[in-house]
Image (cartoon, rainbow, N blue to C red; front, top):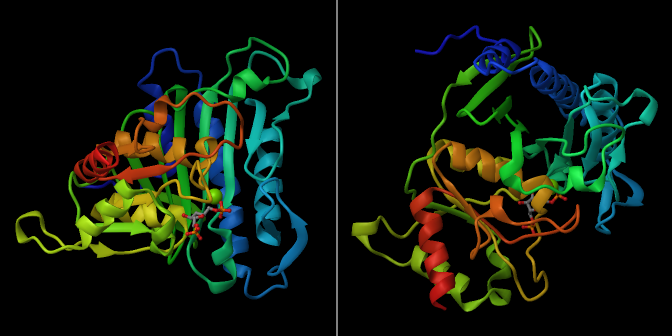
Length: 335
Ligand code: AHM
Ligand code: MG
């Protein structure tokens, strides 16, 4: 049975205590991220009431329009990470390059690098549809001073922790520090994340797929055939599958984590490497899904093994229930 009153911070500390050489810094860093997300959650909930919606008129480095809440979430997370004193560099989907922490404050105690997508699914903000924050933490490889690009460009396998917060009908934070996946629901009356899902596991096989099927004509033969397969009738394999697509990765992923499902954002004619970002979206969710017993692939390669070449690198992403992802990979390989 769940201990209903286990707070996120207490849970994190207890997990870190199990590691003899732990200093408590990772707990503090995760606590800082949770604090920033609580504030973002407040702003998301107030967004319809205050004049924060609408465009800033600027574009992010991917050439997409930036909304005010994205800016807000990005600035807040960066500020809290900087003040927290545990990071030597911060990488954000909204920033062109990484942000090194000023050398005069940066010593061996600043041993972590944080990557985040401050507000994922931001095209859904105006419609009051779930959006989220995704984060990922690496240990630095350099030994002192501000973080370097080598610190920031590590493979997903090197993540020490990853997580996301979904701002939906309630605000939920899900994280892993390499020992299972745990979910916490924000109790707004006390301002605490309380354990609501201990040791989450994703069903091995599902009957739900999530993809932007409007891209069908631009997909490769393998992807087209896989989706056709999911839609055709066969009682032995529980087909046809149901289709569920929010268009907010965090929301689609969270639903699939709870109930089972496969999410696909494959490469297409226009987006040769897919749309989603390896460092900010694919790697953290891949770590979580693997910890929960699922699988994450580009179609031909395990996401966590892809060597990053740039911070904003994109990758096709197929993620979710293990047997479903394996089947999608088979269709891609055979076609
Ligand atoms: P964002 O980080 O700029 O919000 O973009 C990523 C989003 C994901 O949340 C979502 O899965 C995908 O883009 C939706 O893309 P599309 O509208 O092409 O289906
Ligand atoms: Mg995103």
